[in-house]
Length: 133
Image (cartoon, rainbow, N blue to C red; front, top):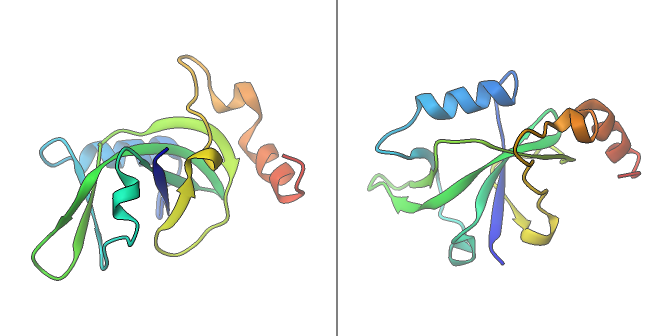
C-alpha cells in the first residue's frame, strides 16, 4: 500500500479553483511543486497521491509522478495536473508536507457523485471536530 502526502491548497477559494490552478501550471504533462528537502520516505510514496486540504477538509488528490532534484539545492515534487475529488474528510491545517497512510486516505468520489451527496462539507467538518465522524 502506498504512502501519500497532504498539503494545504493555500490561496485557493474552492476545490474548483484548485483544479483550474493545477491545469494552468501544467508543464510537459505534470505540475512541479518546489520543496527544500526530499521526503525521507520517498520510496514509499511511489504510487501514492498528494491529498489537498481546503477549509480543514481533504477535498481531492493529485497522483504523484515522482521527485527530481532541480539542481538548485531544492526538489521538485511532480504531480499529475488533475484533481480527483475524494469523500471530504476532516484534516487539520499544517505547514509543509505530512504523510498520510493509505488506510487513512478518503476514497475517491464515484462518477456523478458529489461531496454533497454524502454529507455537506461544513457539516462533515463540524462532526469531525466533535469526533463523530
